Image 1 (cartoon, rainbow, N blue to C red):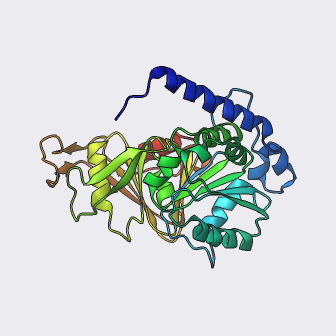
Image 2: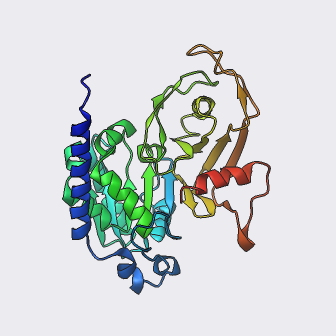
Length: 335
């Protein structure tokens, strides 16, 4: 593989920065102004911070969805996403870049969001890195109240988004305006910094069975796996955590979402979220050969059922189990 000269790299970086600046100038009315007429306190509380602020505003929310969420009946997961976007008057952008059949997937989400009363929902169908660097694409992200990444293949998604103007616009929209970002299935896996890109699902943990790659770094302290209980991926996630014990393993069941807010997490939907904390674990990974089963000692496992909310501070503080508070702190650090 040919090495790209540093000067060319710098030229590309300047080009992306220029594209994003142009997109920001053309963005629609700021979110807090559009949401001011909504009755929801959560929506009206989101204010734009001072220029250059890096911390996310109080309304910033991330949602990791395990895939196969209900899009026809109660739609509890999508309803919660819409709530954090500001309600039916929110502008929703659906990113279908992970899918090999984006139009089919978009049709299903368009029906679902329309049934929930959403009037402004658009697809951002990106098929290449060039399209993800386009000023118009970045403007769509900067004008959004909520960004929803569909399922498919997380490697396909990152091939399009990684390092692009759209990815930078997502980070900026979330940090400066509190835009809610959700990912389902492949979109959930992509939220991590160390993304679980694939691999077998053995009955017991094995060395190097989990394939890892670079993700979007929106949930930097975690490795997210999806379709978790349905596809029996506990051992796979254990293997990933053994390789990166400083990261929290997050396994999300189908039709279930882990909602990460500032100072709290909540499980929404029909299933459970499993947290694997290996920060104080001992393992045989250094001595093991690729494919060899692993010994894991001191691995903490927390299984959180739908409806459970864990808050760190104030009157609603609910974290009591040993190690669980630290796990929640790892997740909420990103927001």
